[in-house]
Length: 202
Image (cartoon, rainbow, N blue to C red; front, side, top):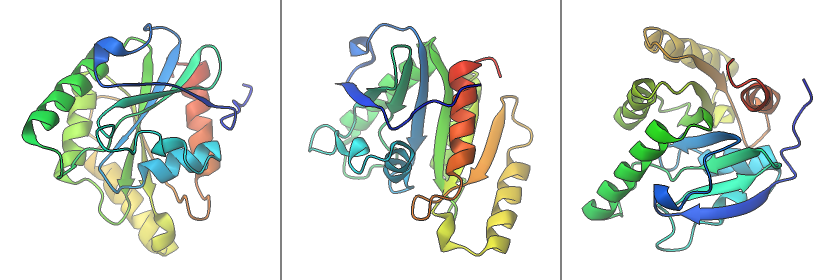
């Protein structure tokens, strides 16, 4: 299996509504996570682009689905962070509807990378996202970010605890520690993405 070049990436579009997304074809992998969990840093580290995940950081753009092209058939998707307290109720409801449509209907979506802070994993919002992924039959790869903040023993214990908590889910869920600060876990993350992008049934 040939490794994909994640550094050769280009912005496609930022869509406020599901209906505005490009044609449903090819292979998409989406990154999701609670606000401040480290999703943007993970994307920037993966692609070696300092500001890749900041294209939508302007006011009014934070609740858009951002798509980036790796090649003619592979797309990387940045979903806005959930748990955003400064967004009004109407905007939150709109985004929840669009997220529901995306996860439920997007046929080319092959998997979701869910970013959780290793110091605060499985918040109620994270659990809701996992439940929704299961209801839409979407496989998950969880990266426990900011692992550089903990010692090795606590990292291993947290990974084990999260695995045990999710053992009864029917979808395929894989878990790994990750650090954008020192790059640990990057090889494992890229290998998982390579599988989704080249062997979407695995």
